[in-house]
Every structure is written in C-alpha cells, then in structure tokens.
Length: 281
Image (cartoon, rainbow, N blue to C red; front, side, top):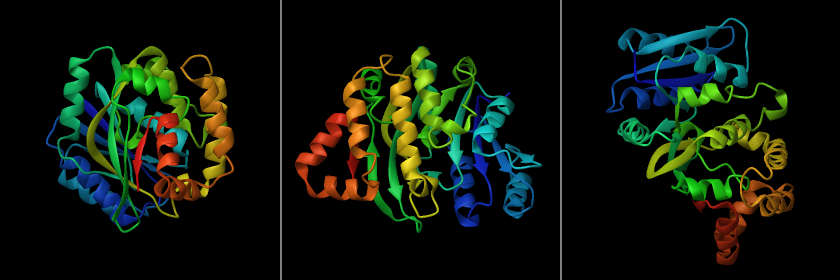
C-alpha cells in the first residue's frame, strides 16, 4: 500500500503541460506513492501521453471516465480511489518544482498529528513557463486561520492532506454553487476539524494564462468566495473585514488589483495586512 496518492486531473490538456506535470510527480525524491490520473471524459486526446507513462512506471494508474464528470466529481473520484494515507493534488497545467516536496510534507504530517493538511509557497508562471511572480502564504495555523475568510490560504496543487481528514468532511462539494471555489470550501471544512500549515519553500509552479478557469471565470469565483465568507462567518476570525474586502474588490479585475499593488507600497501593505498573503509580481 503506497503512503501517498497523487491525484492528477486531466481533460483535453495541453500535451506539453501535461507531460511536465506528470514528470514533476514521478521525479520526486520520495518514492512511496501512486499517481492516479483521472482522464475526465470520452475520446483519446491525451491517451498517447498517458500510455507512455503507464508503460514506463508501475506507480502510474489511469482512471478513464466514460462520460465527462467534471472537476468536482472527478476530484472526489480520485479521493475515493486513493489508497495512500496522504493525498496530494496536482492539476495538468501546473508542476512541482522542488523534488523533495513530498518528502518534506510527509515528514511534517508524520510529526504533527493534529494537522490535516500542509501546503507550500508557489511561483506564478505564464503560458511559456516564464516566472511572472511568487506567492508566499502564512505558515502557522493561527495565521492561516486569521486570514482564511479573507482569501484562500493554501495553494491547492501544492497541498498534501490526510485522506482521513478528507473523508471526515465528506470530500469536495459537488454542488455547482461551489464550482469556482470547491477547494476553498473543502479546506474551510478541513480547518474546522484540523490544524493547517504551509511550508515556506517554493515547491509549486502555478500556470496563469488566458485558458485558465481562474481568469475566465474571475467574477464568478469572487462571488462564490464572498458567499463562502458569509457561510463560515463566525467560525474563523476577522469575518467582518474579510467581507468588506471582498465587497470592495469584487468588481475590480485581478489584473488591475495586481497592477495597483505593484506600483503602490501603501496598497501592497494594506493588501498583505488584509489577506495575509505576500504577493510579488
């Protein structure tokens, strides 16, 4: 039985991105894991790439959805089929840039039994793989908790979570209401039962480009995020300031906000004070 299950979702993914993502998992210095690739939907668009890895490495397992289930149900399918004590998430656009990522996170969860999940800092990259920024999240549980209603305090594709913790909260929400922030809701629930942490190291390269749902659906994502702040109001600190921040910024495009933060030191300090996130562009 593997200690870690790495769950990777793909659906008509860019072939070069997908290959980079899979390779970053298989090159980890920590070897006791399985790589579950959920190929969501009919057709064989990515199968030639997946088949090569399947033949080369016995840790690779492919789950082929006969019909497209979508991201929410596919994430839960991955959790259901994961055999590891811990589960790592990876999306086909992104890749891990630290070969010891899993080793560090497994060590942390082995030594801190009250913690349900641990993430890392991340680099932002463009469609060509060029670094365009970096984000460092709060490390300690009390700091993560303090800012959790203001913004999501974990980089989802960087996280290693206890499978037991995922099961206790019922997995990812499958309602379409949470389609644009299912990871946020999921970890808000995990944080109600367990402590959360981040490592200070940059272990993830997160791709930002026009094909990314996080840009194309930005307004819906912000609206859902604000709904979650209202839903968990009172269960985490600083709920009032978190709601004010989200109401103020909901109509402001992320690109505009990033530009203002980059050019104005006062706004950058205010953003960090409200969100807890150290963002450099």
